Length: 137
Image (cartoon, rainbow, N blue to C red; front, side, top):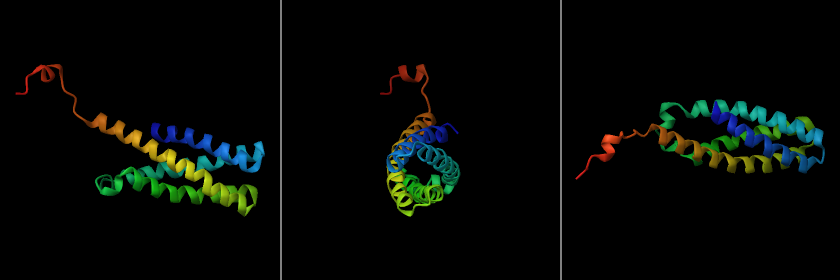
């Protein structure tokens, strides 16, 4: 859940900034920034659950790039749908669906790398002081 919350914070910030710049309206920008990331955060949670299956986790598809592409497709779809429903404007929905997910896709890639490195470090066995001091010749 920490991973989902940390990505949500990044996502909300990017969504508001892009939505405000596109619409010039704080209210619409705020609504988009609240609703679109909430929907995508739920989608992210289920996306992570799907990618945690043993088969995917142990396959070559578990690389950050594969997961990033997979989530990008979900993200683009959600972004367009939410923005179009809130603005009624296909152009703003389309532009938002191209810009905001692209920025968040890059953020997701680096976010995923950080979390995978963290998981690897936690899964490595720790040596006790005696093993460290023991000569390995």
